[in-house]
Image 1 (cartoon, rainbow, N blue to C red):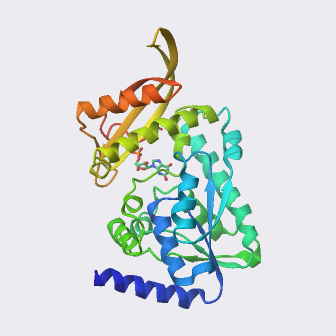
Image 2: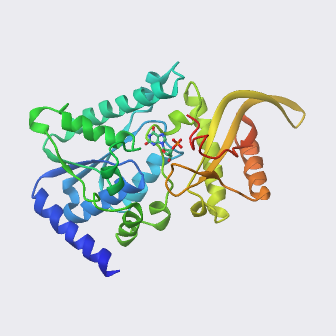
Image 3: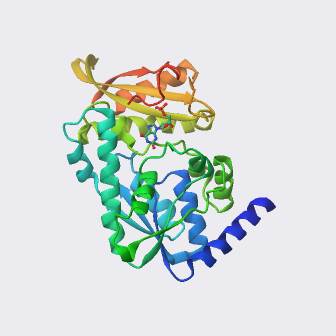
Length: 318
Ligand code: XMP
């Protein structure tokens, strides 16, 4: 595709021109936008790019490991991986209000990123995967990455670290970002991942969050996503995930009575995320997902499917 190749060549040249011999730091989340931005910038300036990946402990199963494999090993990018899980979990302990949880996670993310970026004092630029819809919507749906931006512009960093923004995807729509990503050699399945909210599993474990519940949810969610891929359904839906309810119910397993949590399988079809319908899956598919979750995930003995549309329900449960 000549248009894309042109775009990439032009942008690579612009990045080199702007950055010169300076260093760039970028918050890599594993999501499509920050990943495409990282690979594009890396193509332009190689090791002058330093990525920071913050593991909040609220990410999908094995996310950190996969990011290191996909981008650290495959693309040879410098990635500083920060395991901040305990820090996030301890700050969230005892908190059940959704907006309060969002605030805590956002604040903590900025604090961790800020501390970590001090390791790279020589950096002159902060790169972000801001895309055109983020630019036009003043109130972006983005979580942490948008928070970093405002924070760094306000100037939480010492004078010598005032960072200039580098946003090479600012003019692109999502579908264009994906095409650029594929043209850069990022595997199709990574470029077509569903969106994932900044607060992550912190708002998908309903109510109080703890390490045990997060682990249970990660396992259940991973099974659902795996089945979607296996049945060629992943790209037919816009966003799919599992929610963990803090509600226990009675079940029976073998000749034992169980008393465990309830998982809700959620999948939405939408073009703009403002309105959405639940995905109309075949019963057999849902039955298999339910059986697998109940049989394979210790801690869940009941699975429900969310058949609410937006509005009046939202896509997320919190
Ligand atoms: P709702 O639940 O409002 O979600 O129908 C619409 C879209 O926004 C995402 N979402 C968030 N993304 N931080 C984010 O980065 C958040 O706090 C947040 N809340 C919702 C949600 O995943 C869906 O794609």
